[in-house]
Length: 250
Ligand code: PEP
Image (cartoon, rainbow, N blue to C red; front, side, top):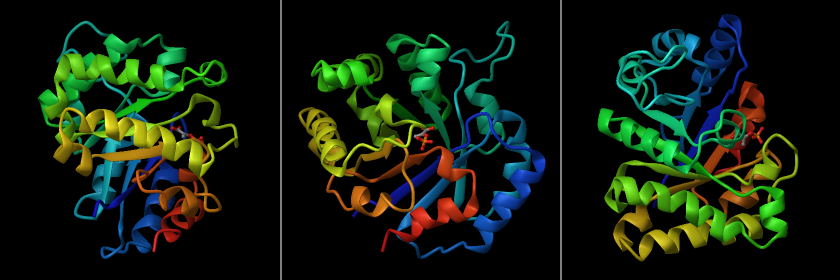
C-alpha cells in the first residue's frame, strides 16, 4: 500500500519566525507511525533553517523550482545541486504558476525534471488543465501533452523515483476543489497511461491531488483509489490546517 504524501507548497510566503513556529508545531505533532509522509516546500532563503529544524525528523523538504543548468550565468536561479546541498529530497517542477507567470513550457518543465533526477532529487511533476481546457473537454489531452513531454525526455523508468501532482489550475488557491469523482477520473487516466508502459511502476507511483485541499475535503479525496495524497498550498501555511488534513487519513 502506498503511503499518502502530504506536500505543503508555501509559495512566496513565510518569514524566519513563521518557519520556526510552523515547523515547531509540525514536529511536536510528529507521528512516525502515521500512514502519511509529510514534506514542505519553503521559499529558497528558508531552506537552511528548514534543514536545521527538520534534520533527523520524518518530515522531508524540497525546492519549489530549479534551473536545469548546473551553474553559471543564470541570475536569480537555483540549481539541483544547490537544493541537494541543503538536504532537499524533492523539487516541484511545472507548477502552474511557473508555467503561467514565468513562461515555462512543457519542454522547459521536462528539462527541469531531468536535471532534478540527474542530481538525485525526486521531482514532483505538476500537471493540470485550465478551466477553459476543462470546458472544452480538453482535460485529458492537456494532461497527456504535459506528461508526454517528460516521458519523451526522461522515459517511463524515471517515474520510479518521481511523484505526479494533478492540479487543475482552476482549483488552485480558488477554494473550488475538484470533486472526488473529477479528481479520481484524471488520476485514473494518468495511472492507466503510465501502466501502458510499465504496470509495476504505475502501481507504485504516487499521484497527488492539488487544488484547495483542506481538512474538510481531504478525507473524501484521499479515499479514492488513485489519489495518493495532496499538494497543498494555502492550508499548509498554518500548522493546525495542515495537520487537520493529515488527521483525515486513518
Ligand atoms: C498549490 O499551491 O499547489 C495549491 C494547490 O494551492 P492551494 O492548496 O492553495 O489551492
